[in-house]
Image 1 (cartoon, one colour):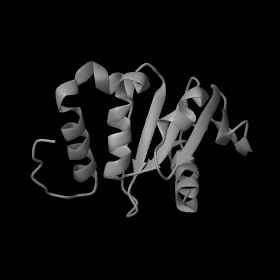
Image 2 (cartoon, rainbow, N blue to C red):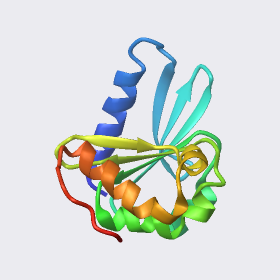
Image 3 (spheres, one colour):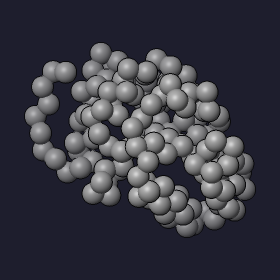
Image 4 (cartoon, one colour):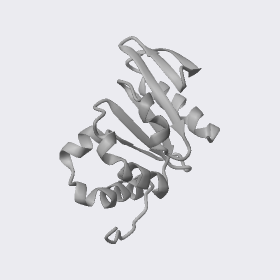
Length: 141
């Protein structure tokens, strides 16, 4: 996995915590996770993958898990392919990080409540392109 994703998520979580000061420590490579983040409110489990492979991690999903992946069409395809399994995890966050440093964050459970599954892939591709600052015309996928 690219080291920049591991560094990126630590920096991102520290930045997000700069006011709440909830993070107590980061434990790297613990219990099969890239990080276990000890927080005042409990533990958060971080999985970093270059190429999103749901079958490799689905048994590791716990309450408050964050999956960090590169922002690629291939990873969006993997998300769509496994959507029905992924949305069963209420406190799961997936962060798509583009190499330029932009990101978009998805809570699949909540997204499933407010979106139309028939247009799922097109909607996710639209979110991804918008986060990158791209102006593209999406065709039916």
